[in-house]
Each structure stands twice: as C-alpha cells, then as structure tokens.
Image (cartoon, rainbow, N blue to C red; front, side, top):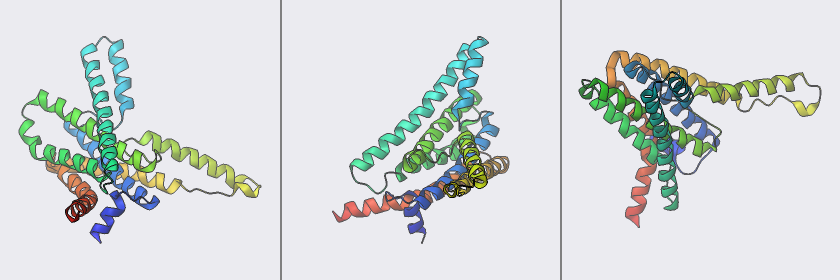
Length: 246
C-alpha cells in the first residue's frame, strides 16, 4: 500500500489526484521550511517577490553589498529550478519512472544534511546564516519546479500569492455564474477546493515548522526529509529493479 502511494505521488504516470495530493504534501513542506527557516535566520526563502523588492529598497538606500546578496539568493532559487529541469529531462530521456522522484530525493538529502549538521555549523554565525539562506532558496526553487512541471504550472506550492489569486478568481467566477440565469453559467467550482487545501496545507506546515523548530531546533527538518523520501523512494526502486532485469 505504501509503495502504491509513493508511485501515485511521484511516479512517471500522472493522474489529477496524484498531482493534487503531491501538491498538498509539498505545500505543507514549503510552509514548514519557510516558517522554520525564518526562526533560524530571520529570512523567508520560499518566494522571490519579497527578496526582489528588498533588493530595490536596498539599492535605493545605498546598501549595495546587501542587495548583491539578495541577487545571489534569486540566482540560487533559479538554479534550484534549473537543476530540477535537468534531472527531470535526463530521467525522461532514459525513460525512468523516477523522473519526478529524483529531485525530491535531492531535496530530502539536503534537508537531512541541514538537520544533522545545523547545530554544529550554527556556531559560525555569519557562515551559518549565509549558507542556510542559500540552501533554503535552492531547495524552494527545486521543489517549486517539480510540482510546476508535473501539473503544467497549475499547482504552485512555495508561495501563497499565486494560490490566493487563483482562489479569488475562481470565487468571483463561481459567484458570477451562480447569479446568472443562463444555463451555461452553472457553477463549476472545480479548482476551488484544491486551492483552499493548498492554502491551508501551507499554513499548517508553517505552524508545524515553527513549533518544530522551537522544540527540536534544526532537527525539525528531519521529519520533512523522511516524508519526502517516503513519497519518492518507490519509483527509484522500480528503476533499479528494471535495470537489474535488463
């Protein structure tokens, strides 16, 4: 049953329910990383809107060196998305079942390393803050690209702005159709439940991440890594088994 669930979430053969369920999981993880990361380094890393806006403010105030770090964060986020695209396209060219699982296993590995080594490198304050922010930006770019490629840019998980905008658009559309007399305007709120659950998943993940960091410190990323491994491991095993048979 666990294996089938893993294939359902991250296997190469996609279904709408599989995309939605993976989106809920990744929204929870993104919320937890974003909130827990803020408590660790006082910086949100799941969305680039704030970082780019902060860069503009810093340049206007003459703080060019800090603005340069914001640019590095942006480049790191983009690099994470690029790595996902490279991994997915490589696996697809080899007809692997794990094309979407491999980037998530990479994310899980990075989170696990951070959870294990975080306490040790935290003593080097400046280095720790810099490395942590860049690591989390990379992870968020990596993760967002996975669900974007899987869903055809329908589902996003690392920032709430797009989710809230889509939810508002669908709500307005539904209200308009509800008040229309024409039969062609029958209410069809297809995406609204999914968007609402994504929003709630991000919030619950954020609350869990914040509480987890307060209770466990950097080790709070370990359960997140374990959840990603559980979701992604079976397609990798399937590819290994297929290769041995060949």
